Image 1: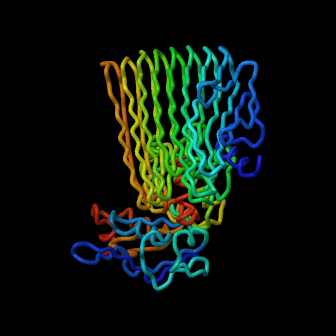
Image 2: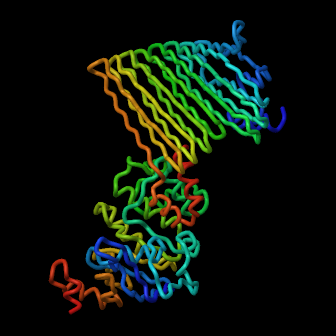
Image 3: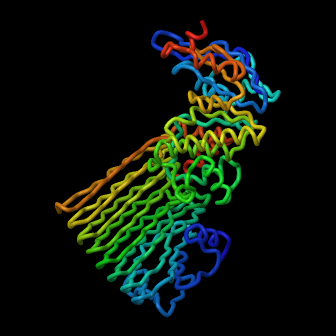
Length: 305
Length: 242
């Protein structure tokens, strides 16, 4: 791999070398490396682009890395990855996409990830998106995440859009059965004229299911962000949605959290806030010796941490 | 030494300009513990903020340790060793207590170092090191973290704006002890805006600000009895001045 590719892998998957455990690295639509383990099998789909990841029941403390990198300007793809997570397993899955576009054509990655969690399975899923390159071609990433949870399973979904993505439509859909817990943390930063649209729906279908959605974003320059997280309570459940955005420059942000209860025992809460960096926050950090620009940077990095 | 001559600060109101600070002259020697006190709305916080550069005050001259700071901004004054603890500190969503203390110190602090600063303001460190400085903290907790940030900053001039406000009695006792230790064990100049007798009694000097002017100033043993003997509620300091 060249330095550009290595940097993309480091940005989206914190990979500086071949990862331990199962992995599949996709580069410009082709497999750049794959490893299955005794408990985690990765196979190519035969009917469409993508892979199946099968995790044996009871697998614990193992990880799967499936980063995608695109360096070819004008390249576009739609990839389908399905995760079958066995009962009682506890794994880390790291995905993510990095695009380096040095040309004038649009590079695009649409990833459709479906998770099937069996009873008692626990997954921590980290997905990072990052774009770079001196070209004028757009960098577009449209991730779709579908999560189907059986009884007492748990998923922690951490999505991060670091920088450089010109346009994204993020769609997330979760079905949670009895005793399931869903924790979604979304971190997003846009700048220039970038556009980010995030749609989420979490259906809490089983008693004692829980969902906690936290979205934090920073919209700079003339970028546009839209958030539509929705939690539906169809049982005795608890759901909390919180969207916070720092707005800067001439950015535009629309935050529309929605909670819907179809059961009298559903407890659902939502909060949303959009605001600029407060003057007293800047001044406080300036009294500690930071310049205004440094103070802004620290406030934003803390906010998105 | 902090030396101020002809300090003025006014704000625009619907009735025209309103003088907040009026031609204030001050000299504060290095290493002194000075309390600024006076009636509400008298200009104490504005004076403190003017020293830090937080309000657009004007002055014939303002020097700190021989450097003219009249035209310097907040950051530049901070780099010269001036620090200010806000009366109502801001919250920072996402920023951890340890992050703020590290920013204040100008380097990454160890857990042990953070622990020491938090202990000095009466906070149980294991409960706070990993906490965000957000709405989950009470006003009193936030205030004590603010004071801890100044301790971590370790500036040569520390200005605390009503550090006792919103703090419970037990923590207040710990805090007064911290100020006493700070004064005894460091060469820092302390300026504390306070109405609390226990803090005033620790000081070397008192500056009484009223109506935007210095009404009285001098050694604590001289000024304090005058303040305590004042009898007119609300206007006690002015009455005493007559």
